[in-house]
Image 1 (cartoon, rainbow, N blue to C red):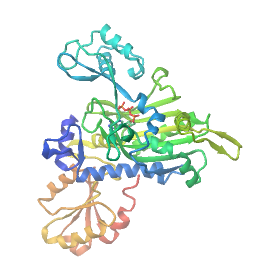
Image 2: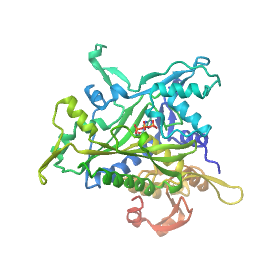
Image 3: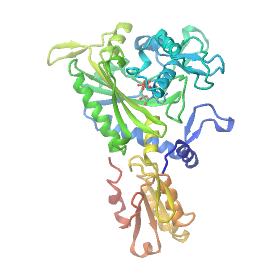
Image 4: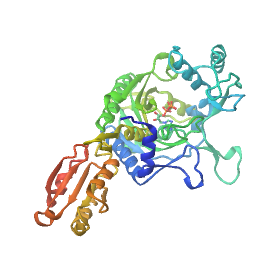
Amino acid sequence: MEKTMEKIVALAKARGFVYPGSEIYGGLANTWDYGNLGVELKNNVKKAWWQKFITSNPYNVGVDCAILMNPQTWVASGHLGGFSDPLMDCKECHERFRADKIIEDFAEENNIELNGSVDGWSQEQMMNFIEEHKIPCPTCGKHNFTEIRQFNLMFKTFQGVTEDAKNTVYLRPETAQGIFVNFKNVQRTSRKKIPFGIGQVGKSFRNEITPGNFTFRTREFEQMELEFFCEPDTDLEWFAYWKQFCIDWLQTLGIKADEMRVRDHDKEELSFYSKATTDIEFLFPFGWGELWGIADRTDYDLSQHANVSGQDLSYFDDQKNTKYIPYVIEPSLGADRVVLAFLCAAYDEEEIGEGDVRTVLHFHPALAPVKIGILPLSKKLNEGAEKIYEQLSQKYNCEFDDRGNIGKRYRRQDEIGTPFCITYDFDSEEDHCVTVRFRDSMEQERVAIDQLDSYFADKFDF
Ligand code: ATP
């Protein structure tokens, strides 16, 4: 079976996971809307993150901060100065590119060793490399580029009625800064002692030059970020701890070891403030892509905010009687990216019997958008089946389907990843039992109706 993006995008659209944005107006490039199943899947992914990183975690608490922030935030974080991509145009076909990406792609195709990412190169270094290797335009093949210009990735807008510099605000390009500016507030109100973390799930915006690969890279996306504050000198231990924690989270939810790899950045690739950075990557049908960035950010962010705001953001350890600016470990995960990874990982076409193929999404039950399909064998049995639906839909997202033959209905549930189907048949009226069918093994089991609550009680845990 070949797993392609075309198949996954088509299924996503046909079944209500993801539609192209603003479709009736011909769309808006690289925007996507989650449909009736997509919203359930994405909410389940965010819930699974929140549960493991916040609710059940002894160290961490959560926040939900504003997208618009005082612009000084972006001065302190470095986004106003440095958050830009090196942009260049082809003078022949007028296609626009990121210079660093052209270099990286060219180097990979021609087996040229670059020593990590081109991210840290100067504009001049990039231009020299492009000239020296006569890199052709990926679209038209000619070699005739403009100079490189730096393009800031932050979306700009205005707060209030006058559109002038004084009223300029930015849509946040990451959720992390809302956490840093509230470090003192949360520490005080939660009465947490270091080490502790603050997590947030929310929208971020980046005016990406080259969005694409479905929902992998978009200009509006959601992030799930944790900023974990610890004592200096304990940072590398905590870095290792959170790295493993993230790997475990992905694997528990069904990402297999061979579709995941962990890439430690080498010295040349590290940001100047970072002591260690790791990317957890996933093997998408279009190749390896970063899912999760885990970075030891030292005391950089809190120090920057302390300098720019003039506020004291240090922490006083009353047991050791010392004062310091905490170090930060940041695991940062894209919600849309990891949803896409779960969708790709789950997708399967299985041969079941002679020439018969079923499409199935093997979601972990905790992530499956519909938990239980409730299927009366005949419309005459709707009353009894509806009672079961009423009971179980109090707790689980259930789907009631009484249309078409039972085999087709099972297939439809397989295709949207429903882990369990309940069939209510003529015997059910007599023996007060139903048949539970499992998506993956297709095996069936008879369960008493009054036992269904306890039967399902632990089926969606992870
Ligand atoms: P990339 O190299 O792919 O642009 P990045 O290194 O700039 O990513 P970070 O700034 O570390 O990304 O952001 C943390 C996480 O947020 C990423 O690992 C990714 O999952 C997600 N993310 C970042 N940019 C986007 C985007 N444009 N669309 C969707 N998700 C994104």
